[in-house]
Structure formats: C-alpha cells, structure tokens
Figure 1 (cartoon, one colour):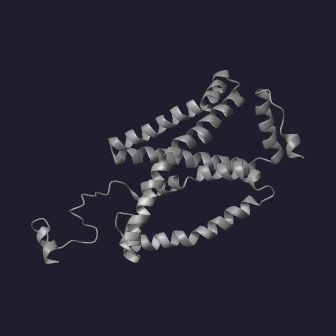
Figure 2: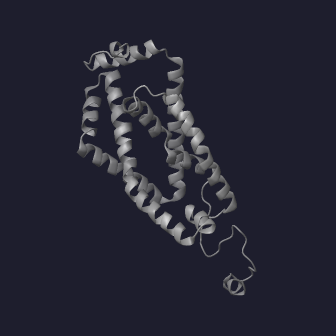
Figure 3: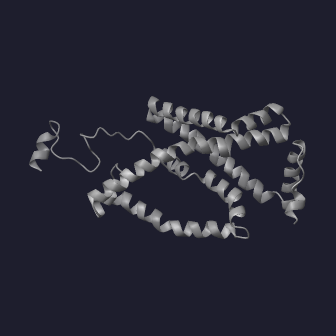
Amino acid sequence: MQSLTQKLPQGVSSVGPFARPASGLVREITAWQVFGFNVMNANIGIGLVWLTLLGPGLYPGANLYLAVLLAFVGILPLNFLYVRLAVAFPRSGGDYVSISRTLSPALGFAVNVAAMAYFCLFVGLGGLYTVQYGLTPLARVWAAYSGDPWARHLADRLATPTGTFVVSLAVLAAYALLMIRGGKLYFRAQTVAFVAGTTALAVVVAAGLLLSHSAALGHIDGALARLGAGPVAPLAAG
C-alpha cells in the first residue's frame, strides 16, 4: 500500500473505488445511452425477423409465442447474474473483471480473448443485416406500394453479392468514422437510431394487434398485385 501511495499524484493519499488516476478513463455517456446501447446490441429487431421469417419454416406447427415466453424466463437468471456482478465489481473491463475476481485471472483473460476474436468476426454481420434485413426489404416494399421501378431496381442491386458487400462496408465505415470523431457523437447517433427503431417496432406490433387476419392478407395481396405476383390469401387458407 505504501508503494502505491507513493505513485499517486501529489496531494492524493488514497484511491476510491471509482477514482482511477492511472487509467485515464472518463465517463462520457449517460445511463440512457448505456441502456440504448445494450438493447441495440441484443438487437430485438433481428430477433423478430428471425422469429417471424425463419421460425415458421424451420419449426412448422411450433407455438412461437410460447417459445418467446420460455426463452424470456430462461434468460432471466443470466440477466440477474450480470446485474449482481456489475454491482459487486463496478469497474470497466466487463467479463474479465468478474471472472478474474471470482474464478481465475487466467480464465478471465482467456474468455475475453475468445470474446474479442468473436466480435472481430461478428462485426461484419452488422452491415450485412442492415442490407439484407433492412434496406433491401425496405426498397422492395417501397416498390410494391408505389410501383416505382427505380425502387425495384435498387432492391435488385442491393440483393446482389456485390451490392450487399459494398453497402455493408459503407455502413461499417460510417459507424467507424463516428467512433473516430468521438464517443459522444457515436452514442448520440445511436440514440437516434434506437428511438427510431423502437418506434418502428412499436408501430409494427400495434398494426399486428389491430389488423385482422383477412385485412393483413388483403394488404399483402394488393402489394403483390402491383408487382405482378399472385395472391397469398389462398395459400394461407390451405
């Protein structure tokens, strides 16, 4: 303790739990921005896309509502664990801090190396999903409802491997540029995206609750007719 005290700045006799003069870490974001970051990192939108687009095809006859409820109940203990660890070890460093303190520093290091390798591979999917599940379907829906041939051409171009790669790279480069310009700017942009995405999801959920089954199929059939495609209502009726 004496050697540590000698290295502290002049006039500072001890170090509190959140004062870390040697690290240079500064709290730059608000609790609301942290909440938005974590919710977007979990990506509810992508989860709903997978559930509604892939779920019925991969698991025909399954009760998707019950599956969501069971998954929610199953993940609660893990969420509770992370809350308790964050309270017990209020430090930057994530899993490394909690694992190294409770189990082993070597294990904490190994887990974080694996996590960083995973994130380096996974980060590219952010751009891919933006194009694959966001921009391309948006352009197709726009073309279906407006009859705009330019929107249909844009959707076709985005769906190609080259178009997907170029736009995905541009999306990732834009977010990297935001981070380079500063964390505060990045989190402000992400807050705007979080509010817009949450609002859009709320609108979709509200429409799903208010529209009848026949009315929803009627809207889909009308959009498909503008694209020269046949109706899906007979398929839904078996």
